[in-house]
Image 1: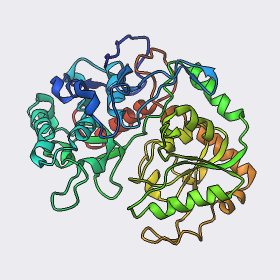
Image 2 (image 1 turned 90 degrees about the vertical axis):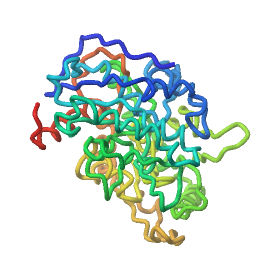
Image 3 (image 1 turned 45 degrees about the vertical axis):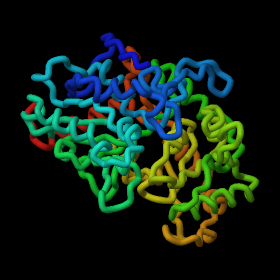
Image 4 (image 1 turned 120 degrees about the horizontal axis):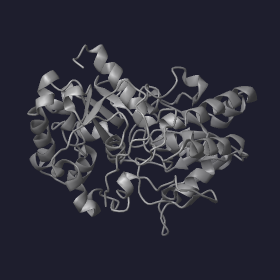
Length: 416
């Protein structure tokens, strides 16, 4: 069960940030966890919400014992943000002196839990109640919520149901009046909408507590032998427009001696893709990692790729470039490869796209520069362990978000 981080005090706030963490009624966060077996249609989430959302410790990764690795579920960024900010050196207990206000509503877990509801009023109930609650708060009224933010562990598409369109189990949280003013952090934003939406990394498996743990891992991925030119970790899709390109990627990988395929289709023993060691073992031995869109534009696999020093290969700009502008270099060619899907989104003609040919012709010196850039990005794409007390000397994913939000608030000329 959830255990809040203990605020310690050895770390110092390096940013011009003073963030106040709201203490909400339990029904908006910790109370949602009580029925953890039913928080997801397909998964018992009870093991995953352990350790402040990090999940169960893995014990060892790639044969080396480590306390930094956890079987972290990809949709629990909201819990990890909460735990990190409870123990963050930039946290203030004085709301009067804050310039940022974090509202720890577990909206993603609520949306997942209520996605079974066929009654839209019941599905939206807690989101409406939350919106009404936060708008009544003193510090909200000071700036109409423009210095407030929320972190959600699911994609924006889970919170923008159009009652006249298809029902994908979403609610209408992002249409609530309070959410129009707040900054909303999501693992996938709507790239053409939502000016107040900002993409944050999916949580991967690495949650270090010390600088030494980060440096050791970076050295390991820097020197390891990579026998596979490229790899794909994923499954085919049916019934969606993006199915054709996945089918063709699996075909090309199977036909290439330079590609390693970890197919995520379920079998009697369960998919190997649910085993972090299997996923990391493939990626860390690959030069390039294929990151194709699936149920939505983005994938947690992209951040597994960065973590292992594997250069990501994208087929849509919305898979990363329009999503994580706070975190990724402005020049996408410095850390990734973009291959245009010439068949088009609605076409099954993807055979004109030869992945192996595209990757083989990239000069080796450029590959080395790209891999170095990917490895250098590991710290800022990683969520530190919430109970870490060491002064890292660099920013993790939460630190980057706070610094960027602070600049955003200042640009709106809000009172500090």
